[in-house]
Amino acid sequence: MNCLECGDEIHGRSDKKFCSDGCRNAFNNKNNRDTTNLMRNINNKLRKNHRILSEQNYIEGKAKTTKNKLTSEGFNFDYFTNLRVYKNGAEYRFVYDIGYKYLEDDWILLVRKD
Image (cartoon, rainbow, N blue to C red; front, side):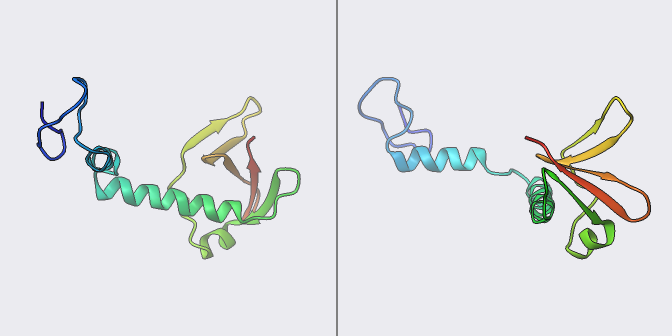
């Protein structure tokens, strides 16, 4: 049998797939990386949005801020991970564990989900 990464002959157990830890790591890194620039760019935007939201001063898991403040810090409102509508009709957009809801005027309510 030959190594799935480099093609060298494998010695040892019959179920071995790689000749070394280096080849195993290289193979897995290639298969697990973001395969397109689009995915990488979206993941970067989500990470940036999450970082901006987590830097807010939370009191008991809640905070208030303005849309202008978030926008000035580089927050992109087009990118969030899920949308949740509660029984009372409140609509929250979440970036992983942090949600936000639009309030009156320019205000936004932030909540951190446990």
